[in-house]
Image (tube, rainbow, N blue to C red; front, side, top):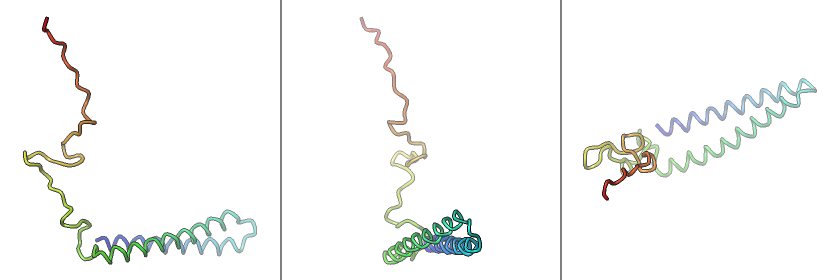
Length: 112
C-alpha cells in the first residue's frame, strides 16, 4: 500500500514537471509572459526537488522493508483498542484526557 502512495506521488511530480515545461514552451512565444515563465520555472524546479526527496524516501522505506506488507504499520506498533477495564482507548475513542475535562468545582462545605 505504501509503495503505491509513493508511486502516486512520483506521478504527480512528473505531471508538475510536464506542466512546467508546457508553460515554459508557451512563454517562449510571448515576449510579455514573465509570470508564465516564472510559474513554469517554479513547477519544473519544484517538481525536480520534490522528486528527488520522494526518490530518497522511497529507497529508504524500501530498505527498511516497509513495502513488504500491505499495511502501513509494523505489527509491533499496533496499539490495543481497549484497556483492561473494557473501555476504548486512544484519541477520539471516548477517553477524555484531563486537559479536555471541564474544570471541577468544589461544593461549599457545610461544616461549621
